[in-house]
Image 1 (tube, rainbow, N blue to C red):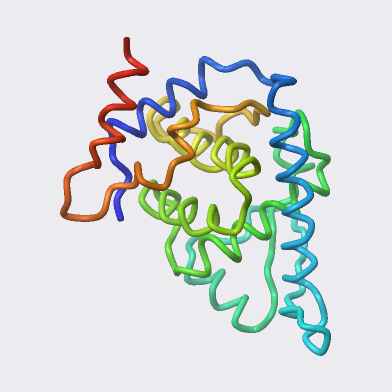
Image 2: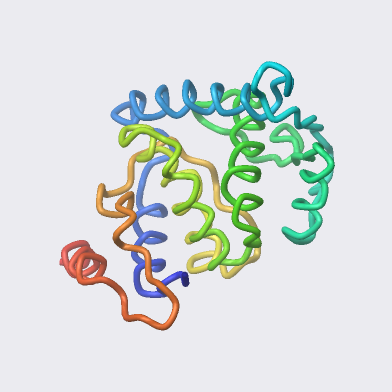
Length: 200
């Protein structure tokens, strides 16, 4: 699958326009927090009790240059996560520890699960894969955290830095998996309709 540049630019524009925190997003972020903690417990849980037994280490530097190195670590039941507290980019809703948990599960169940990297196309694929593990409500927050931030970094900040973290809800259509573009195929009608609606 590929990140559609027209859709990506529309997502970035919505993210940039949004405030840093919107109380109307609190229910979605509470659901994201609950569901992320359950996923994290499964990730690090002991194998004899049904967990995956992955040891998560929080580091003071960005640990992976590419997804292959991360997949290799996970194959050895280890995963490194760049500490939120060292990024200078705190989350307006999640604590640093909660945000670190989210980064761990997104890397494990999004990127590593499909072997896709951290470029725009890899981020789009990881968002789609990981979104299937969340309820529709939590998926709205997940979309802001992943699709919103990555599209903003690519299409608004030109890859110079990470996007400011926000706790808001983007338009619902951006959380719809049917807006994903498959490689070699034109974007879905719903994605194009969403872009037209948002640009009016």
